[in-house]
Image (cartoon, rainbow, N blue to C red; front, side, top):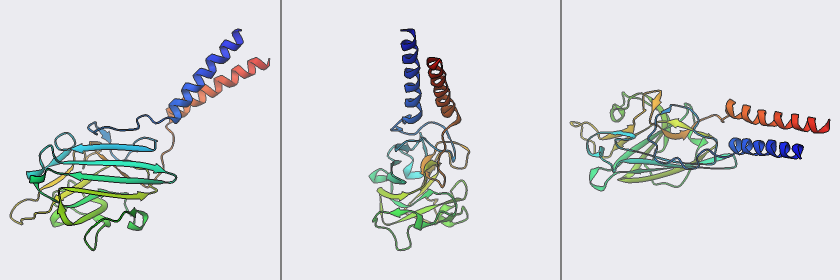
Length: 236
């Protein structure tokens, strides 16, 4: 009787460990307003969502510094591919979006991203380094390698999606209003962590795959070791 009870206890502990290792920690990451570390993997799961908006996650100037300004993302994993979807929103009366830059791992080529059919300018999208000494990117906190989407018709709502084999990490974005007056600073927006190692970031593609966390592997290993000891005792 004691042996059966002991075996049940260990099997129960093993089941809990397996659930903690292989289950997603949080399938839907609600509005992203907590401080994170730049360029780190998010979670090892198959579905991610999040939102940053003005004041709690976005720095914005002029007409965009209101609660109607936001950038949301939804990421799903099927097989080896991740599908990234981004939605940009601003209030109707606050100004249209001209272009949006999403950070990528340096040297990522446009051919590595499978883009959906979206209505953009002729030379868009484009992947390259975007510099702060460029006229319409002068308010970026730092230079950034990314993919730039130039809208053919300025709009208060913009959705783009693409597929990539790159897993999601925390990164940056930069957006610019469509109405440009050389005598007035551009209306721009970016995430509050841009230019820092910690802060508020968005989910973006990276070029590596995540490995299991050491603490998780120790938990699983300890449970398996305990089960092995019980089995050995039973054989005796």
